[in-house]
Length: 151
Image 1 (spheres, one colour):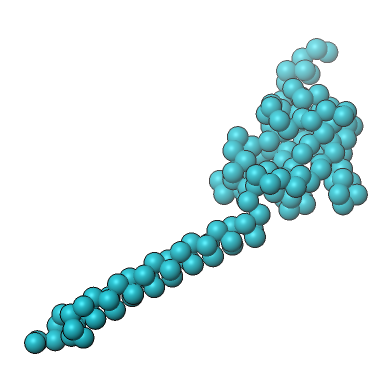
Image 2: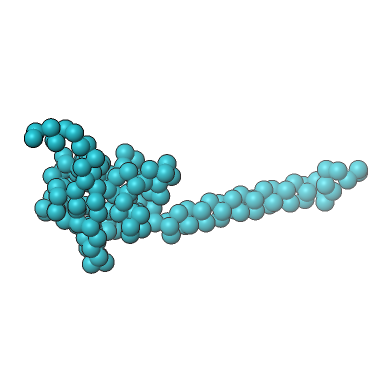
């Protein structure tokens, strides 16, 4: 009777995912050994193709909430800070995981990224203007002749 415990590593549990800001509930069937979060949260859009290999990855696929903005709670305890698996975090059969969307100033929003690009572009334009100005001064210094005009 006891051999069941070791024999079925693919035994799945039902966990309810509650998206706090959207009041949406979904039940997922997952392995208790599924990691809570990916190794690397920088891979927000599953660049490695393994976004589904963690609870946060599943939530990303379901809801579109970026990994870095997900805060996961179970039994009033934040469960996504230290890594680990569902089992090690006490997320068992029938438990509810509450997902809150963090407004995290540390994460670059799309706007932030756009601004950074714009700043870079403006910087480049400014540099080009300065080069242009230098060139003009150069021409004036040479008495109105460019270097190539044979005097």
